[in-house]
Image (cartoon, rainbow, N blue to C red; front, side, top):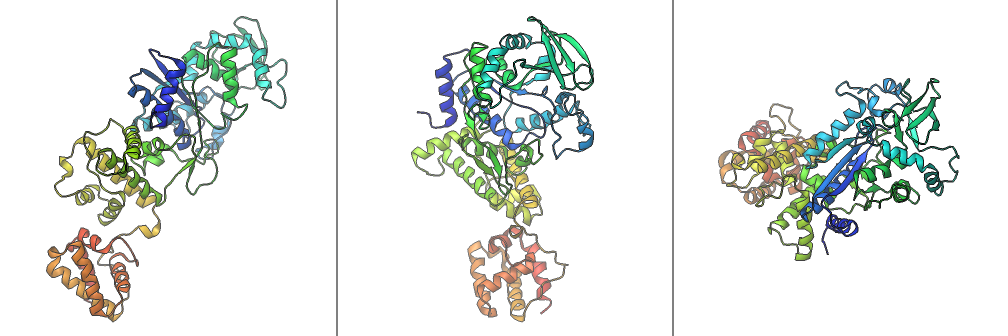
Length: 532
C-alpha cells in the first residue's frame, strides 16, 4: 500500500476512472479578494496528487479555474478605496476596476498575485478564466442542457432545502447588458437558444442568444457539474463546507450524473487552516487573511510544501509565525537528513518521510544532501551581522564549504532561508529572542564594582588570547571569572549580556562572542573597563 495520501488518491483515481491517456485534475476559486493560505490548501492538495499521478507514469492535465465571472458581492475589509469598489457591487468581478490601478481588473489583480506566487512553490497549472469561456460561448450547449433539465435540477436542489425553489426557478443568471448588474429576472426561454430577461435595477429588457450572449451564466451549483462534464474532470477536492450533507458537492454529483450523464470526479474533503494566534476562519471577503506571500516571507518554498505534504488534507492545522517556526524548520531538516540517510529514524518512518521530502521539492530532489544551516543558528548569526546575509551564511556553513562554490540551487535554498529568517526576526520573533549588539559609543549599563571587575577580566582575556579559545574553553573561562570576581555564574552571564546586548539574556554566550569576533566585542567591553 502507498505510504503517502497523495499516492493513495492517485491509485484511487486510476482504479475508479480506469486507464486513460489523460487524467484531468481540477481546482479553482472566485477571485473575490486576496487568495489566502486557506485557499492554497486546495491548490497544493491537487498539485500533490498531480505529482503522484505523474510519478506513477500517468499523463495529467492540471487545470485551475478562475471564477472571475461570478458576481461581486462584498468589498473585503483589506482593500483600498472600499467606497469606490462598493459602486461595482452586483457586477461581474472581472468588470470591477483594480483599486490599485496596476491590472486590467480587480479580478485580474487578485489572480496575478497568486499566479506569481504559485510558480515559486513549484505549482504551474493551466489557468482557465471563466469570464472568457462564457464570453466565447463554449458553455452554450451546457447551459442549454441545464435549461432543458431545469425541473429535474430544481427537484435535486429541493431535496436539500428547507424552503423549496419556486416553480418558475431557472438555473441561469444574467448580467444586464445596460447596467452590468445581476439584478435581473429571466422572463422566458424558447426551448432552444433564446433567453429573455428584465433588469429590476434599470428596467432594461432584451432577448439574447445563448451562443453569443456575454452576460449569461449558470448558477454555481449547476455551473460546477457542467464544467466537470465539459472538462472531463477526474479529480477535484473541496472544502468541508462544500462537502457537508446536502452541500454543493452532493448536489453537483447528482446533477452531473442525472443531467450531464457522466460520473462525478474522485474527491476528498480538506479541512480549514488557521493562523496561530488568529481566531476564526480565514476569509477573503472579510479581509482577515494571511496570503501565500506572507507565509513565503517566513518559510522557504520547500518548507511550505512540506507543511502540506506532511499533513493529511482532512486534518485541521495552524500555520505558525511564533517560535513554532523554528521547530518546523528543524522537522524539515530532519526529514531531509533522513531522506539522504544522514539521520536514522527507523525504516518504516523513513519510507514515509522520504516521500514527504520528494513531494516538498521544487525543481526535483537534489542529487546529494544540500549544504544547510539550522534556522535557529541562522537567526542568531543574522542578528550578529545586522541582517547581512552573505557574511552570516559564510560564518554558518561548515568548514570546507564555500557559499560561492555551491551550485545555484544550493545557493538559492541557503539565501532564501536566510531571507526568511531575517523577515521572521524583524516581524514575528518574540521580543526576548531578538537582540542587537550594543554600539560601543552608546550609554553603558550601570554595573557594580564586582561586575566591572568581571567585565575587565573578560576583556583582557579576549584582547590577549582570543584566537586560542574554543566554545568549550571560553565557556570554562566564564566560570573562572565569576569565581575570581565574587559573582554567581548566572549573575556574570546576565552582566555580560547587558554589556553586549543591553538585555539580561541572549544567544549562547561563548558561541556568540566567538562568532561576533574580537573586533566587535572588545570595544564594548573596553568601554566598561575604562570606567573602572
